[in-house]
Image (tube, rainbow, N blue to C red; front, side, top):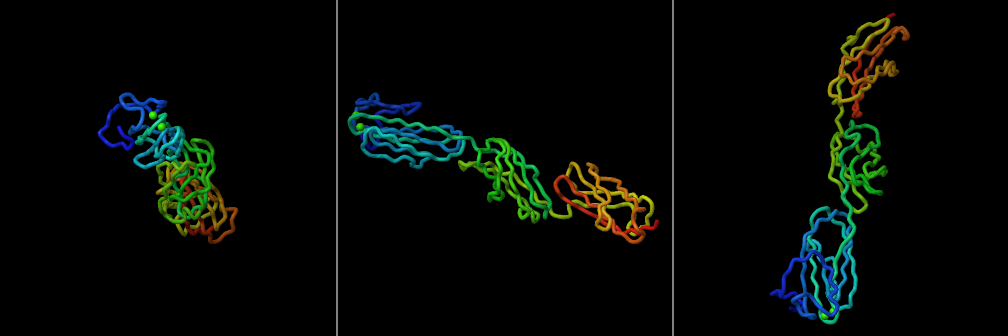
Length: 298
Ligand SMILES: [Ca+2]
Ligand SMILES: [Ca+2]
């Protein structure tokens, strides 16, 4: 027994906690003064902000994963100290060193707090066409805290807290200006951050539109029926829009990749040359278009 943790140990034991108030006494098998103790244990933490509390008479040191977080290695009456650290969920090592010089002896260590880390499970949308407008992205997951922040390639974006399972983030057009991918994460105010999901910015030209009728350069009259096919569209609903010389004639939502029929009643148009364009946008905001030149002769 000594006050400097110098081996050999007088006694070793397995203990479940540090809640000792020995008064003028001491641990079984040790003298009542001039002894020191080292406790080491691995404990499962929920993660987040954890406050460690130590009360000692006399000196005490508390280590978390080998780093000293409470360092009060001196003679003193029973005194309480705290240290708060943000830690990951899972196992962490807590080590406590203590000595008693004389008089009363107290050694107590405990901790409290901790919240689980956020998890991110899906993004809506999770892709956009390069050059698309800014938009609001919905993020779904668990353990989102009030004040949580959405990170786009580790840069914060304006975030609205909806619930512990949903956030909204404002993504500006500049984030989707060019084809690439972005890493999206959620960080809670305590510093814990979710794992990342990938947002894809699709290059232009991935959605191709084909007008198979009428033929390019054809002369049309009455009702001209357009037959349209597409390739490279995302699954789900698409919108097919027929316009002539920039004026929208008709717009149709469908999940079909073709053939899709669109009608142009040419009798409402003057005779002459026209440019007809079919524009298709898909559920991922990708857009493609194709144009043909027609001559109206009613
Ligand atoms: Ca003492
Ligand atoms: Ca004592």
